[in-house]
Amino acid sequence: MRKVLYILGELDDSDLQWLIDAGTTLQIAPGNDIIREGGAQDRLYILLDGELSVRKGGNELARLGAGEIVGDMSLLDSRPPNATVTTVGEARVFSVNHSALRSKLDLDHEFGARFYRAMCVFLANRLSRADAMIGTGGRVESDPESRQEDEISPEALESVALAGARFDWFLQRVSAEG
Image 1: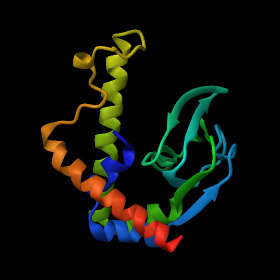
Image 2: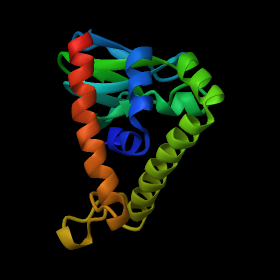
Image 3: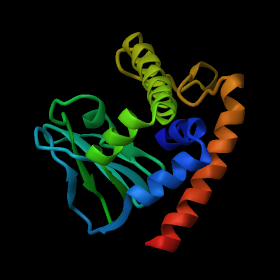
């Protein structure tokens, strides 16, 4: 499930409005690094349109589509990024400065609780998938019955539906302002 759905499923409407007001929409040409492995990183990006390539040591690890978030690990952990994120083609991203986001997290404890809960749920899901891959030697089972990657708990279904509607609203708002 796309990371933005975890985040938007936890945040409320005023939180989303704050993000829109604090951030900016950027159009990025193909082949540009928005995050460099080992480099300084001071922004969180939400991919609105296009595709991103995630590479470590020159090897591609993943391709990301609309709704994915990058730069969040550098927000949570002061160490330099451990991968490079590059635009595959033309990409449109929404960008929020880490310092503005950290300030909001520090000053607005309710926003902070919602944001950090969303990050914890997402990271727990990622850890669960990684743990499942260890047992298969890094391979994801092709049997649909054994795939946990896209499974959503019944408790999360309502949040995901709300998050999808919020992401659509978010896209409309940043497109109108950009």
